[in-house]
Image (tube, rainbow, N blue to C red; front, side, top):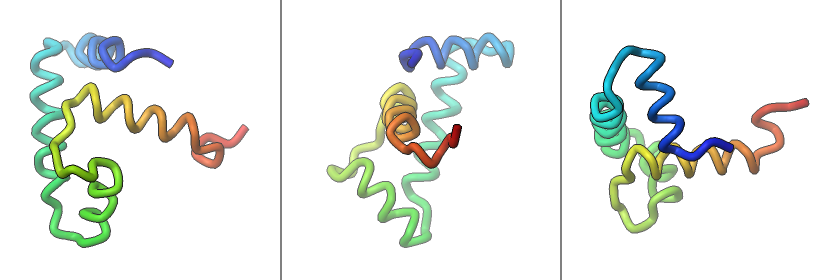
Length: 77
């Protein structure tokens, strides 16, 4: 698995943006999503980040990548 840094660099290159721009956009999306009004969505965030902190883009990518790698139903063979 690529590390989050490589993923962020790849996204930046693919979209002609700086890595800082990509990180800002992802951070903004995380900021909005973590405050989603749907109780089910809020429970999911609480499961992922029980202390209520807002993850960095790199932390977010890493956690989701690990979850996807661990979930054998996410990408069936």
